[in-house]
Length: 232
Image 1: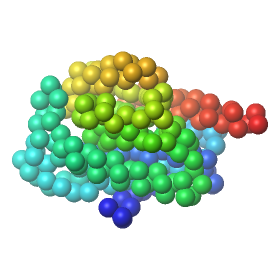
Image 2 (image 1 turned 90 degrees about the vertical axis):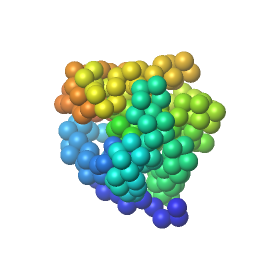
Image 3 (image 1 turned 90 degrees about the horizontal axis):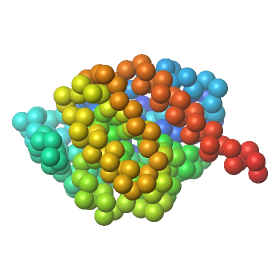
């Protein structure tokens, strides 16, 4: 646990002012979303460091115990609540917190860090951010769900009670059914968390329209954070 997760890093400009830590889905790795960076349209924003960590390999129960990159074990895929390994979720959250701490040591304040994730990686983005003790800049949650709602409700922190969230889901998703994404949406809305909710006619994937929307949301988020600094 003392070792940082291996990761791919991409910087849009020297001396980045912001960081996005982006978690991949089950069975993938950090390479999965690297090609998205140049498509986000961030050329006119302050520099951004994108970190794409690789999840460790582990047996995944719902896939017959097959060993693959995973943020935690998934015991069941039923829509009622994808029974998940809460201990594994907590371990992965701590690993992402270690990456946040490393960014702090490199000069990026926590409120300049966005957590992003797709599918199982999005579940970790939700859980890590909403339970983090210090305020983060935002969450990007793609084709995902909240894996342990009761655990999250009990551990949510005041620091991130109003964290901005961009969440998107495919209406044709047969891997993470739209209802699970909607449950996460409703969890956030019930707590007054500012949410930008998007749906797209796509399966368990991303699309160009979605990537453009993420880029616009990031630019707006960075601009809001930078504005108070500029006025000092």
